[in-house]
Length: 80
Image (cartoon, rainbow, N blue to C red; front, side, top):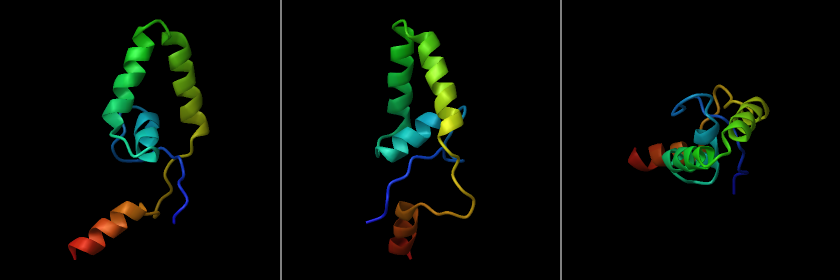
């Protein structure tokens, strides 16, 4: 089984790709991650939420060039 890695994808990102990366890591639609992030931020945690997002954008690496997602490869092979 392939090792799961947290990264910021180059596709499907809104700002820095943090929510898209978290959604992909946990196999959840990134929209749900964004909704939860927005709700928590609106409940009074805006400053910590923004700081955590900025820190996550710095710490979480970007998706590497030429590395294909295993799920994408399997899907392409099934369709062929």
